Image (cartoon, rainbow, N blue to C red; front, side, top):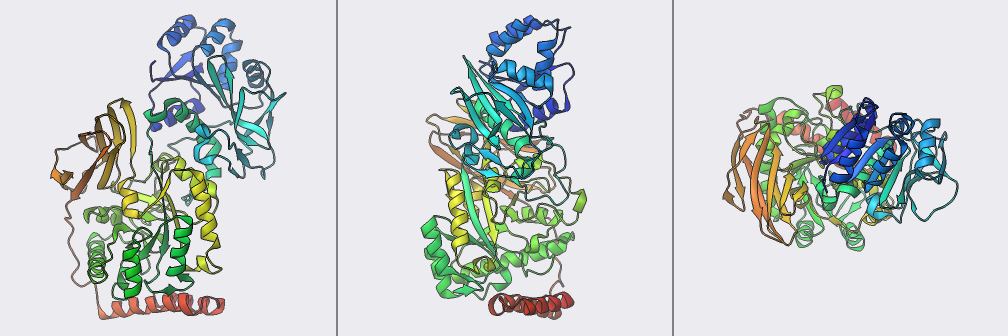
Length: 599
């Protein structure tokens, strides 16, 4: 059987057909677009289709209706075409009379009609019994739906061969019907997302599942079910909880490390403290000991340098280089004095960063940035981020440096969306999240752990180094996409495999060397991609390390007594706010006014 999908259209391919083709390509499946009309030799196409044994056929309800109604195409030929393919996706189903008629005919009358859903308060209801299709979304209900494109299939009776995957108001939106040797999937959504379109709204960076669900996920579920590991996928499901700002003292504001540790042990999760390097001399010895002894639960990474307003939003390379060098020096001094290693991962203060700051992180051989925003301050509305950029585990659009997007605890469907896409589930909060205790984090973690049996909580360094995409080319050959400069590639199979590994590299930052398992390894850069070929023994792994050159200079007079005093005052006011007046809103507003005046 060929591994090529076929997207069929009657006449010229529609916009939705092209959107589906783009999604299929991004997911890594081979496909062919075929146009059939009265001028084509339809019988020859059907004979070839049955002979080649294509794994799936995807056709819009509009095109399928046109094929059945075309006088030049015998109905039995169309029926034979649909019967000789193991998987069929009929998408774009709407209440249009012709489309309803063809769906009624295709399902032998089981689907009697297609209806509008005009209540925006309806939710998507995902089946809990079809996990091989619905994966991390299984059993979830969330909304609102998109009333402009989502519709419901009305059944005249229940049928054992009919499976509901996603429903709205108990009417199937996405379902399948088993007919002899063919499984027909039905998608009652008018649209497939345009992956090259900008994200919805210039600040729509949180990627709520409800905004894109019906336009993306059902089609992806179908393709994954058909092609399995031949699509780009991340076989691991990672998670981490990040807390910004706190000192490593017994308590900081509402956060108490001993109580947090108890919750981590009870609910099986890990926490990374986004640590401000300016505080490198202020860590409690007893808390450092807890972090060392319980490194399975606790870890730290960088949170800026001084944590001043927009300190990494600058576009001045020399200034950023000096700031990052200072922050790194402080973290190394902190590690030497406390014995606490740190992940070379940056969390930007206030979420503000520039494209230049990402390039400087790459020059300093940092692993990645983890942030609540994906939009650089220097680009603003001209950020250029598309839906396709958000489908990958990390955004590498700026400086070829991986930017992982994190979320505040909220709708569990949003984290299901991340895990389904192969992204890690990255949570972020501050000390005031624990104002009323630890019940909220317990509930959130329990929900995330219920999404998959494979969720693994770990520190950011391990999470990023083990996050990549791969797809099977053959039994003993794999394609692989990596994002970070330090990557662990695993061969879980029982046979030796060849891995063709690629990483996006524009050449702006020179490569010093590339090591595989600690030894220099040959590579080439072509078409803006670094490529290597490695053979990995069965049930083994390799370690890839890419070292970059830093050709930026440093500022000599960046620090001064005045700037140090301003940083000290800012940190004092922030800690006073967090530790002593968290319940007094009036004093908090007063402190913010002082900070705004001074900074």
